[in-house]
Image 1 (tube, rainbow, N blue to C red):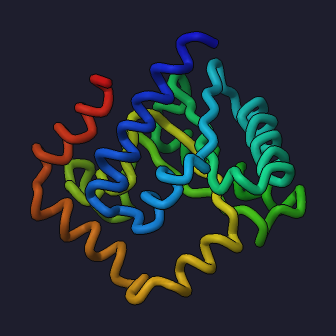
Image 2 (image 1 turned 90 degrees about the vertical axis):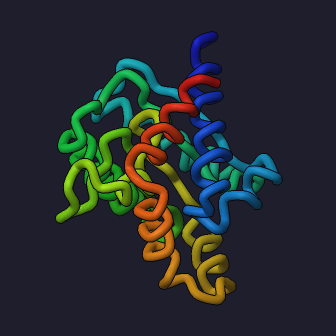
Length: 182
């Protein structure tokens, strides 16, 4: 679809201006440079057709080793964070049902992401907030290699939270909002 480009543009801006620039994922810059990220937009998403799209993405990743990671962008659906969490659970079950557990993993990003126990307005939530609900598919083998090669992987989430809290809620809100202006 022609309008998919705007959703992909917003997502790419978020990856560059938030994920990479804030160093929320120390491995993302490499994949941006390599152009190894596959972007797919699904409109009118239901749990069923989202799982069909997810399966197709994993099959694409099976066939094309140049695709290191993939983002399934759901711009019009799963606005409720609770409904989205159910979708993530279903996606994880899909991995198991299709013998992809240990091959791929699913990471979650959502505009209303809230860490368990955190208030909704906690700046740390912005480490996982994205312009749209999306499912992120990663190669388990690549994640393991990256983690093993990182000098202090256990500190990454804490540094991300510290960064977001130091910058403050207003800064993090504006940073995410700027991604929608691309």
